[in-house]
Amino acid sequence: MPDQPQQSKKSFLYVVVCAAGIAGDAGNLITAAQAQHWDVGVVATPQSLGFIDVQAIETQTGYPIRSAWRAPGDPRPLPPADAIAVASATFNKWAAGISDTLAVGVLCEAYGFGIPTAVFPYLNSAQAAHPAYRQSLDRLREMGVLIGGADRFRWEEALELLVPRLSPRT
Image (cartoon, rainbow, N blue to C red; front, side, top):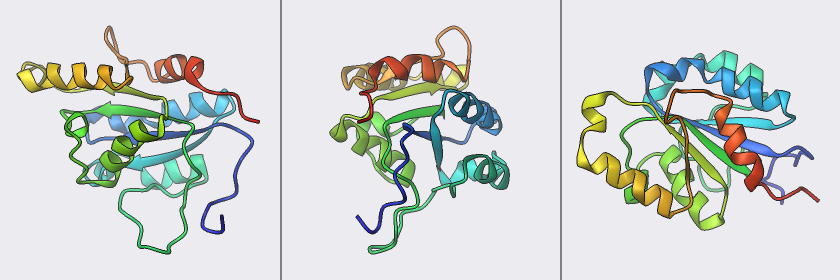
């Protein structure tokens, strides 16, 4: 397709970043993925752009960070995802299918495309106490989303969860 970027022989990981204090360390996941021979692109919520070093991440991945919808006919800046890691996820709308940002839209579509997806919640205890949080996690599990970070937040866990779910590239 003419509007697709050059397809790599490596698996392509989307790292979806939400606005949370730990988002500034998303480069750790990118580094771990690249060490395991993944190509990586970042899809960020508009609010998370203030939490990350956009220029450093774009330099590290070689791709622009996506945070807004593209216009019809504009080229796709990232290849299709083979897997998605949502790190760090805050109290979200994804489980409810509320696709009001590009990042949530990508996640909602991932379910329909069957793209293996892992999420790493990172929110405060007051937000986690809300009943909708547990309901959201249950819904995501029902959708086949892998939930990580139960004991502690480890960026590399995303790859540990996703690699067994990947189909080999042909």
